[in-house]
Length: 337
Image (cartoon, rainbow, N blue to C red; front, top):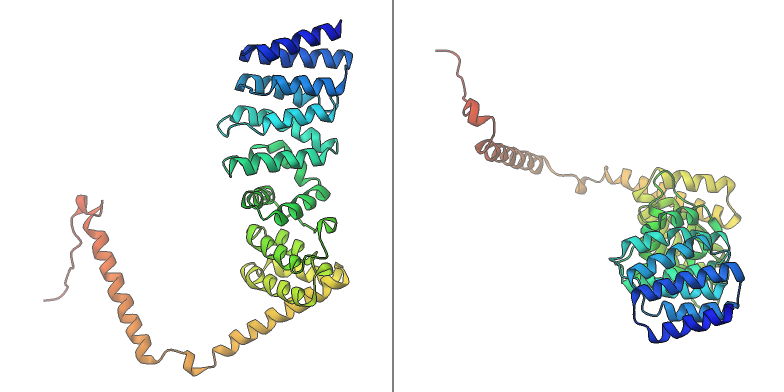
């Protein structure tokens, strides 16, 4: 009986050209499969026909089955759903939000490769028009899964794709209450690719600049895999601009690494903290260099110029003053004879 129904559905899909027909076919196929568990490959093949040119209504229907049945349907069918969803227009916000729950289930079900491939495809294809931030439930799951997040950060920094770097910034940067500590996924590093650690360090500094602890922790995790020259360069990047820009939080983080870090992390932290001390000593000595101090004449000229600019600005602002229309222009009162 099931075979006859499936054959009829296939005939309709091949010769019919109605959005209602396609959405009804998806619903019928999923209901039959969930009750009978007919062939996995057959389900994927028929879903591929039904979702070949999906309308928004068909995609919304498909997303509902995708959201609540990721553990009940085969990976081949999930792959078909994800292929259809990757073609979604950035304007179809409703569909994008609808699949958020199903994507979270993929991560929970350890179907990470399916999830990453889909995210890469939809983000790259949209050229930045679709933000990963629209998948709010998925982002929360990612930030609570350190191993997956480290893999994602490493893989997307290595990809050299701007939209994927932006996505990492959105994932990590939305964590306002604290900085997430990151680490390199060593399995994705290639020992034959010289200079890759320095490349990743620069990526981290650029994309994670507003999340300094995330950037510094990721860069320190590269030390064990970097060459001697790369380590020196990475230390310099942590010093400038990260430590100079975030003298409080980064200094505290590096000081903690002196006590709790690995041997290589302790060495780098010690080198960087000594460098910042030397830098500050140099600034203090600069005050004693007479050639760098303005002369009395220069200071007086600056003060006159400052006073002139202040008076000019005050007069300009007084011309169109709201209070002047009520109280008139200010008058100078002279006392005495």
